[in-house]
Image (cartoon, rainbow, N blue to C red; front, side, top):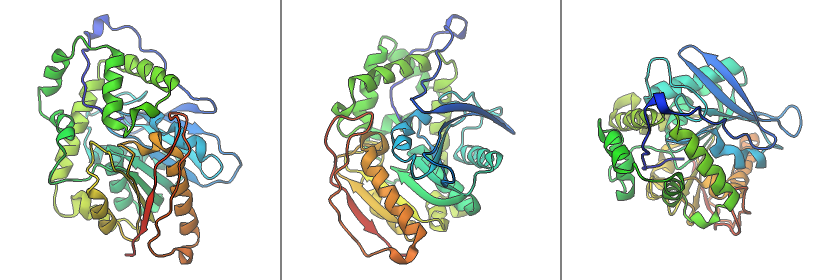
Length: 352
């Protein structure tokens, strides 16, 4: 989950051993070693054999846990694996300390190659959306479909609420914020993250909040976590500056895989206005807008996201069955991290 808050991290010599990461019921964790990095991969056994593989990439400050609600809803449609990017979740930092978008994309490619599961249905949220875009552009052989939830693609006019996250890229700012927030509790930090990332933080259940607090406490014990945050933010900002064939928008135009774009109307980190621009750049894409959702729709409205993906899956299997622009009223049921209700989803299919 993306965040702007920075905790006070004690010296490594006085840090207690981090607690184990949470594993939801039915999930498994395994470690994968590839050249330059070691990953933790979270998987959920499919409901039956022979389902196509799916691979999920989280956002800045998040982990594979961000995808657990959606993975549980899709276990009858895909064989799911979610990665902890180097330096996040349960994965140690990369060997070379490179947290650029290119390095993250290279790590995902190596992980997919090592598993031999490709081509996959590739998902990405926020920073993970930028990473997934680059993977789909440079290695189309590894990607069957592409699903992007609030992808962090370059914006000329950044929302004011997203500025603190961008400031993480400035050398020294992470340390300054750490000192300024030294007295914050894990509960305060989690509430700040939820207020920033959810359209309606009240949808998080008490159990979900307790899990988030425990995860925040675990992260505060990792001596490298905020360095990974700052360097990844710097890598994202640097990617925004790239032009030519390496530019993210140019790479979006090169994506061949059927693409689903999901944007939240209350997203404080990725501008809702970027939805139409993304739909123009990803050829033949399907755009779903959720007016009440924030930055992590797959956590806030997992039922609605799962339904939209199933439609993409059907269209990808039968390209001739796609229609013109449609606007269904899709009421999403609450997922494991939600209470009641769901957004009205607007779906648009573009032709490229």
